[in-house]
Amino acid sequence: MTDGRPLILGNWKMHRTPSETTAFLGDLLPRVQGVTGRDIAVAPPYTCLAAAGEALRGSAVSLAAQDVFWEDQGAYTGAISAPMLQDLGVRYVIVGHSERRQHQGETDHTVRLKVQAALRADLVPVVCVGEQETARVSGRADTVVRGQVLRALEETAPGDLRNIVVAYEPIWAIGTGRTATPSDIAGMHAVIRSEIERVFGGPGAAVRVLYGGSVTPATIDVIMAAPGVQGVLVGGASLRAADFARIAAYRVD
Ligand code: PGA
Image (cartoon, rainbow, N blue to C red; front, side, top):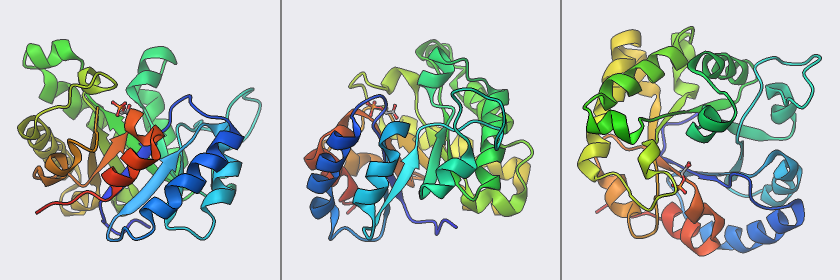
């Protein structure tokens, strides 16, 4: 389902109402109209997905969700399933964001179940991994991230790997204005890639690996030039149409 192009995904987190969504996308779409050679998507809150889907109809920008429950239907009050998202026109779903791991009890186990639920419904899971600052300082970042990747992708069939995206988001870089350096990013991307290929062999090369954490118009070109980076997950800057459009239009010389 994915074609290996870089992915620029905006994560709006808990921001915007449906009417604000319609107005924002009306502003954003003309700004990204001429941008080609990359996949662009936005992940509004659940309550805005229908309005966003309407606004994005016929455009090159795809719809993403910020989470999904692991069962397809049933007595799970408050939960939203992958088939429900699929029916709304959602293409990507963020799974295991560190804010959900921190505030909503998300674990590697629930992340794995959600990855499988997304794949069953033909959605592309965007699996977030990343270390705390303490792990980086103590030299355990690679081990932490390898473990997260391994446990999230356990049970994934090799044929599904081309529909999987992994986003490396160091927790200390999210919402802090502290972007990881290109060499930190390239280093961790190489670790993630080698872990995936250790487990899955050649088909693992089809997984797209993104970076996320304080990506801005000022840093995007350098980040996209880092070896192994196949896109970005953008939080704060994705709420500003001009900034997100500039990020989507990144240039690598
Ligand atoms: P940020 O968020 O760009 O605001 O750091 C990134 C994310 O949490 O996905």
